[in-house]
Amino acid sequence: MTPARTIAAVFCAALLSAPLVSCGSVRMGSGSGRLTSVEHGSTIGAEFKTRVYAGTDPNVVDFYLTDLPESVWTVGGDVSTLSGTILHVHLFLQPKAGRTPIARTANTATVRWLILSEGRVGVYGGAGFLTLGDDVGEPSLDARLAGASLRLVHQSPGFADTLGPCVLDTSFDAAADQQVAESLARAMSSLIGSSRAPSEPR
Image 1 (tube, rainbow, N blue to C red):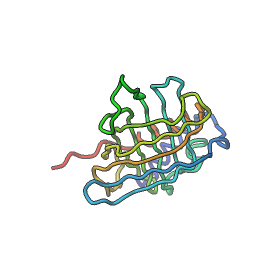
Image 2: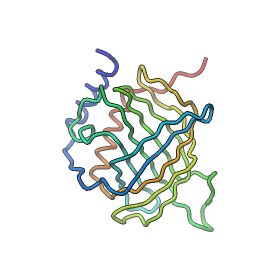
Image 3: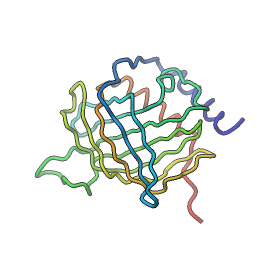
């Protein structure tokens, strides 16, 4: 069995045990992101059709954005031929004037950008400064993350890192939907479970 087929089999088994969810209400507004290599300027971009958030604490919010089809997180669809992205942004501190640093060099959120390339998985991880345009708890939130620093932190066999160290720029709106966020979190964890930390340079 090829590495991509193995990933698909493990992923499907994990997702088939999860409850079904409906995502008809989470497509709204706009959202896009771009990874740019700091070494040679090449980019990878995505237009996120599904964007949700979960959290009621103003300082702890999880955003999940993806351009993958709903079957990936609802019924454990076969991913061995799929290509796409899941972006997870975890806000751990919302900056407030006079109380917390408000500067692009500060970190207020951790980031994981998962790339699925015909069943092969690569995950770029890092942190950056996230700003919100709305209050947590609203039906939707506007957010922006500019210049977050990322690097490859997980890869499955056959995944090629074409970026090296990179920066992420993204702006989006996201609908409040705990159920879909949890389903995307499970899907992302299942896919990452098929990968490993990249080998150290020799």
